[in-house]
Image (cartoon, rainbow, N blue to C red; front, side, top):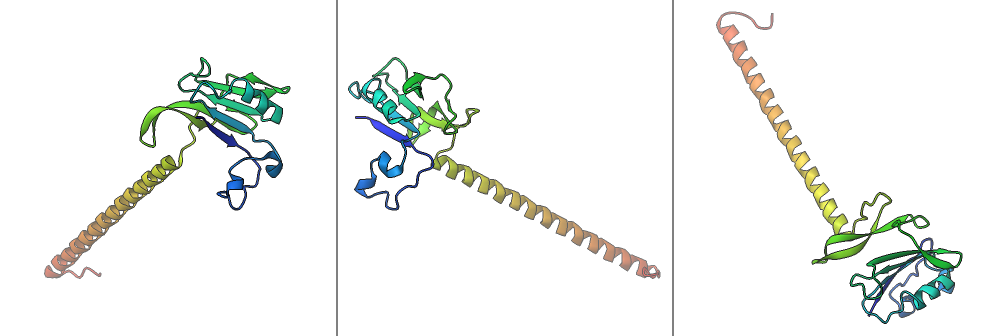
Length: 186
């Protein structure tokens, strides 16, 4: 078994993506080949290094990435290939300039599984966040905002208390002055 991921920029997805006829990527329907194909190797019989490599090159797919976490097809965990003159050449930089994305290997937990994962990244290596990470980041941002608002409210309450204490002190002073026969308004 293997998994294949495609990235295709500047295409219009069909309105009903879950219809069976839309579960495959047909170049004649989208008007162009995908920009990136990622093969995730899970056995030795997938042909990722030869048959698929030649086939994707014939289709004109600019980038072909082979992620082989158990090194079943090659001696490399990650192989990044760029189409040059109709054939794929290995590139060492993880940045794919034509799509404005990079790939990197990341050790961490995803969907409760601790492993090394293939992740999208920025040119500086900064990971693109998953949906779960984005939601977590948003919750953290909302919590920080709530705490900031709470601190601001507490500060405002302290300021009110201080103003009330000042008002009471001023009233006491006025009362003392009047008790001494002094008109504080003069």
